[in-house]
Amino acid sequence: MKTFFQSFRIVLHTARVIFRMDWRNIPAFVGDQFLLTLQPFVALFFSARILDVLAAGADRGTVVGWILAAVGCNYGIYLLERFAACSNSVEGVTLYWQLYQEMSRVMMRADYEELEKPDIGLARERIERSTNMFWYGPWEVPGVLMTLAQGITITAASLALAWPVFLPVKGEGIPWGTILMVLFVAGSSWYGIRSEGRLYELKESALEDLAEEFRKRNYLDQYIEESRGAKDVRLYAQKKMIWKERQKNQETIRKLSRARAGLHAVSNGVKGAASQAVVCLAYLVVGARALAGIFSVGAVVQYVGAVTRLSEGIRVLVYSLQHIRMQGPHCQEYLDFIGEGKDPLKYRHHQDGTEPVPEGGSWEIVFENVSFRYPGSEEWALRNLNIRLKKGQHFAVVGRNGSGKTTFIKLLCRLYDPTEGRILLNGRDIREYRYEEYQRLFAVVFQDFQIFALPLGENVAASMRYDEKRVQACLDQAGIGDWAKRQPKGLKQPLYTVEKDGVNISGGEAQKIAIARALYKNAPFVILDEPTAALDPLAEAEIYSGFREMVEEKGAVYISHRLSSCRFCDTIAVFAQGRLVQEGSHERLLSEEGGEYAGLWQAQAQWYQ
Ligand code: ADP
Image (cartoon, rainbow, N blue to C red):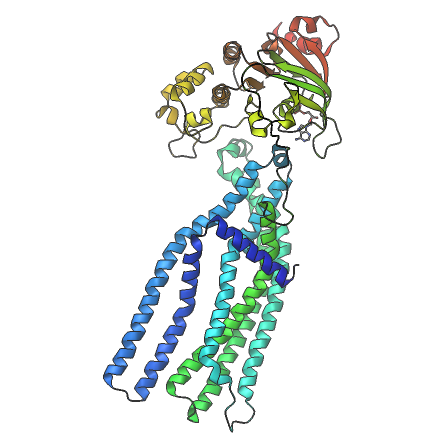
């Protein structure tokens, strides 16, 4: 655990980051909390004054004047506080989401390979879990700093109102009452620090244990609530089983939470008793002095009230200092995640070249002895690959599952960089080109392509602004133009049912929309990675014949298990266990008896004989 000062520095750093992110919430939040803190002191001050002027037998005008001043002040503070609270409720929510959004921004900018690893997801999950379960992390920083300010304000204001109580009075002897009061406040603070520390340890260990149970619970709830699992749940009569799992999980969560709740209750009980003892002593000390004629009636109200607030102020102060210490490590995790820490997590480390990608004309991509191993893997996914792709050339990649076809596409589009060897574009290593510009050369439909719950037109254009005619033309070419025209909102039709008037689409329809999106991008290289898996044979034939025309001028790379779809390509590359084992036209490869291609072809052809 970090020391208080280390944590305090981290918390202040987080506060600066938050202020930079969105400062608008700060005045409302600080104003609201400050006014809330101030309110009771103003009331206390005026009550004491009114009692004193009454006891002194002041004239009616003076008494009414004090009462009006009290009411006016209280109401003014009340109005200001409400105004700040309303503004805080709006801006606070915005800031709350902004802190999440910042993490999403980091994930969106992260290298693809980082997202394939579990680390980034786990780091985010831990940050979210800490805040959702125990209110740790940057979300709490404004509150924690404010509590510190409140602790200081309450303590200072109470001392300002109650200081005469702590001064010795001539002829009173040893002020045992006052000494006891101080001892109770100090003892309760010490106990507060100890019990909060223990509570923190329990929470830290629960973060891991409970997290797993929560993950399980969320997973089971998804299974129960979503239609995705509903077919299996019903047909395999799994309701009882899932329900029992859910209850078992609930019981574990309850057990894990009970120890903390017990400690919390005991700790609150002890602290409450100590603060009541302080109030008791305050009454004794102040009452005795009032009886001795040292304090006025108004002073009794003021001093007892202020001493009560003083013990609360010190409790708040101790609590806030303790919490700053606990927030430190969690804020550090957040700062590291968003790249603000001293040792930020590096989710973006591809080399971004400075060279502009050549415009228009002829592009040629060459794989020069490329080998690739996935991070953390011992196995080569691709080995010594030498391949040449040109604009205008239609290229097919075939091979068994796991032979490296998709990995080849990922390297081609620079989602990964080769472990060994180089990929050249027009003779220059692709790492020298500007990263995003290079990726604009490719329109890919991956096997696991994603269509979003957004309007149809935005999905196709990958943008909120688009050329409607061109979108419709691409949908026509992808064989889904008529379907699009039939939608109640045309291109503005939201897909899936996240929005209330969205439509659900089938796997085949989604695939055609993904193909339309690739066409709309109008990139010089089009890549279809098993794009027709969810299509019926007629739709597939339609797409392939249409596609050949559409991408005639471009470079096209097809990956398909149906070899008949690839036979019209200029070159077919056959992959086996990460190596390029054959390359040539369909006829030539077929004539190589005993070759991988002929084997694959015959295996498929026999079902059609
Ligand atoms: P194909 O597309 O031909 O089915 P892939 O390119 O997907 O094959 O996979 C090639 C090899 O790389 C396989 O052995 C596969 O298990 C491995 N592989 C694929 N993706 C990953 C990954 N993200 N991490 C580790 N290994 C992977």
